[in-house]
Image (tube, rainbow over the protein chains, first blue to last red):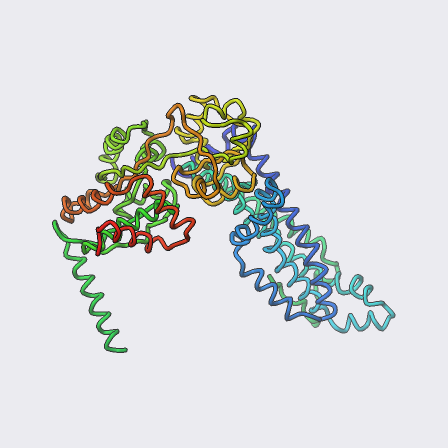
Length: 240
Length: 302
């Protein structure tokens, strides 16, 4: 049997679709933890990025923090965090929290940097006009800067979501659930079908995530921004 | 500076030239590999340094390469020439053979299988040291449930959280042996690397109550854990033996080469192995330092 038929055989084996540890269960675990990580990262990085973009304070600090966040390997984060969280809760602190923390750290930089860059890139004339019309600062942010910057902000979230879905597999080394289990168990059990079945599932999920966020991004772009007039100043290019 | 560079270049050319002149009795470069955990790495390093002391050049790129899944194909295809192997588990989980608790039988059986692999692979003498798969519990768990043997675990299996090796479900000496011999098929199992830090961490933190570790594992002693007895003798005798490719043996003086490794293997008994493992995993010493100290202390190198 070659790799393709082995992988297909594994993916279509009814045993993989029912019972504990089957594909639907691992998929749900993967999606659940990914969504939780993304929400936590959004709660931290989005307000911070918007604030920095609006006030233009702390841009250097944010850039440095984001770079540090990108430089730390997720596997190292899991290893460092694990002893502390496991001491607090022997079950979730071992199998779930370390991966969660690593994924939040992974997702913060793209969200933060894009929110900041998106807001900074908004046409100054627009912002000043809004202020001249009597808008308060919060109104300027909410009614002018965020809608105009939304495509860039969403690009950051899209990038973060895809990275989480793909990197989440690492947690399986430390007993976490999710699709990474198929990779880790497949390698240990000398089962190529399981390894590449898992690979196909993770890669497909990452592509689907990318597609879903691309649709969201399109829907979230204000109609006035979709076809910029020729002499209009361009929206800053995507920062990922 | 320039002079030293020229010298270095000349020296490396000489090494290249001498490596090219192969043939019976020469001492070509040997590529050594091992699985990832500390004990296997330190044993591989001991073999490596002993061969270096005898004039061989050693390529260590394969030491700590990965699991059997990675290592055996590397040996069969000639990407490595030598690896220390746990003969019982190697036979059972590497090649699907039936391993026993008798190391001599395991060696004979493994040799039969390896005769037909990668143009022939030789199993040299095995160590008196045995490192077998062990089920380990914390002292408080052992006291609470009055656990001494694997048989004792059967009755309380679902009160406990189990940590078993990632390859356990398909490993004939793991899940199948537990189920067939003891009726153990627990509901709550976390699969982790056996003999690894995450497994020990999980037992320490209480994530799991029963851990599959190596019997020589230093965490067992350090933490005062209780190793339960495999009262039905399901686990194979995992003595360690070097596996060497025949095409490599053909290039060198086979008898002298084998003698070097066999003399060393004969000296490695279970307490020695446990101490070597301890020095690396708990003492946090470099495998190279631990290996060279042991070789000096036992008179293999000066």
